[in-house]
Length: 317
Image (tube, rainbow, N blue to C red; front, side):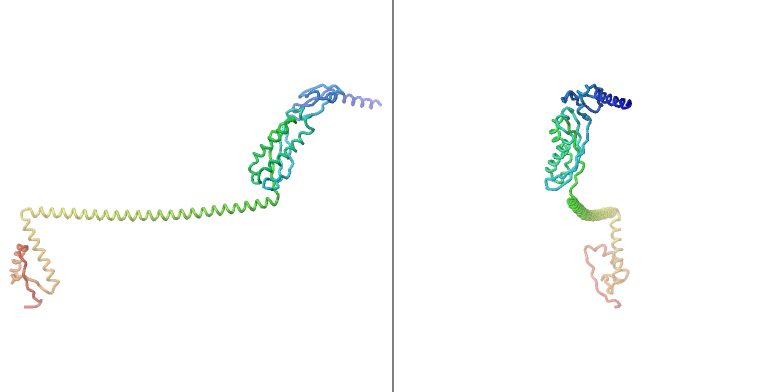
C-alpha cells in the first residue's frame, strides 16, 4: 500500500513538472497554446508553463531540411515516358505559419515539388532533360517557393537525382548513339583520307616545283659557264692577237711572220704529199734547190700571184 502511494505520488509530480516547465533546444521553436489558443513562440531556453492551462502544441525544426521527392513518371514534350526523382531543401522561416498555415508542410512541399517537376519536364524534349537540369531546378525552386510562402517555409534549392527513360527508349538511344559514333568514325576516317590525299598531292606538286627550280638553276649555271668560257676564250684570243700585232710591229716581226708562214706551208705540203697519190709542184722548181728558192718567192708574192702547176702521175718519169 505504501509503495503504491509513493508510485502514484511520483507519477503526479512527474506529470506536474513536465507541465510546469519546458526546455526548448537551440535548433527549434515551440508553439505555446493557452486553453487551445495561440499564446506565443517559445525561443530556445527554459520556459515555465501553467499546468492544465498551457501546453506546447508544436515543435518546429528551424534548421535546413532535406526532403526526398519519390520517383514518378513524367511525359516529355516529345511524348517519352521518363522516371524522375529528386531532393528538395527547405527551411522553416515562421513557426506560426508552419503550424497553423498548413497541416503538414513537409508533405505539401514534396507533393508540390512533384507536380511542378511534371510540369517542367512536359515543357522540354527528352534530349533537353539531360542538358537543361540546372534550368529545370531553378524553375522548380521558383514555383515551389512562390506557393510555399503562406506556409512560412523557404525553398532553398531543388536537385534532380535521376532521369530514367524506359528500357525500350534506353535501347533505342543506345542504338542511336552507336550509329552516331560510327558516323563520326566514318567522317573522321574520310577526313583523314582526304587530308592524306591533299598532303600527298601537295608534296608531289612541291617536288615538281623543286625539280623544275633545280633544272632551271642548272640551265642557268650551264649558260653562265658557257658565257664565262666564251668570255675567257675571247679575252685570251684578243690578248693573243694583241701580242701578235705587237710582235709584228717590232723590228724583224714581219720577217718572223713570213718565216712562220713558210714553215706552215712546208708542213702542210708534206702532209699533202704523204696522204695523196698526186703531187703538185710549182713549174719553176726543176730541182730541190730551185724548190726552196721558189718557196721563198711564193711567200713574198703570195698575195699578188697564183702558182701554176702540172699534174704528174706517181711513178712517172
